[in-house]
Amino acid sequence: EPEVTQTPSHQVTQMGQEVILRCVPISNHLYFYWYRQILGQKVEFLVSFYNNEISEKSEIFDDQFSVERPDGSNFTLKIRSTKLEDSAMYFCASSGGRSEGQPQHFGDGTRLSIL
Amino acid sequence: SQQGEEDPQALSIQEGENATMNCSYKTSINNLQWYRQNSGRGLVHLILIRSNEREKHSGRLRVTLDTSKKSSSLLITASRAADTASYFCATPRGGTASKLTFGTGTRLQVTL
Image (tube, rainbow over all chains, first blue to last red; front, top):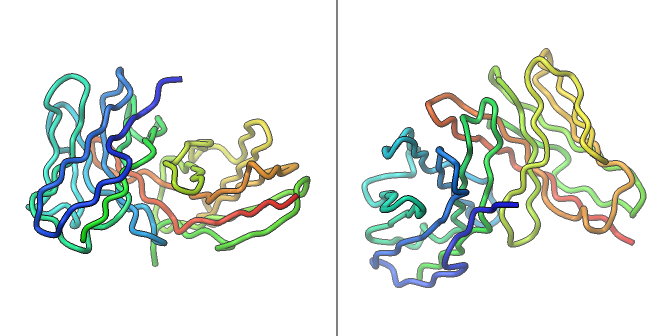
């Protein structure tokens, strides 16, 4: 069964550094998402992406965050200047349609640790 | 309060027993979805129930939806140790790509 893959599985970065998290969504999917989960807390929506542009973003997704689909397969999340509170699991997801009818398929996440 | 609150927060049962988890939500929904998360892994979609459905089955899973009470339940029958995981309900919220809003989750422990 096709799956969403994320790299790296664990990223350790110094505060203030830029980090890029990478995702390869399922190939025929059209909708892409990033979520994060701080240890022990809920999974939180960050951003959705459709038709080569951001569809919706949460309050968490401030100017330090950006997303890109640089080619036909990758979907990246960039954090420009990381803060300690950015430490979390970051999950990429993709869907073949809107969530009103289609489930989202998640990768196994990237654990981001900011020192 | 948050959209999507599961209870109990934690549930410990023995293998072979049934596990029931509940989810309450606040606003009108088009559908409600249940996901499983094994420790250190991503979320796995289990089942989607639409607002015009009252009950749905998938293997050992049974989901009910009561839109009048804004609640859903997930029943896992004849549980196995491999069912040990956290279970989340999620509801799609508006927008072109419809983000999912997750509940707090129920941590299920199935012991031998």
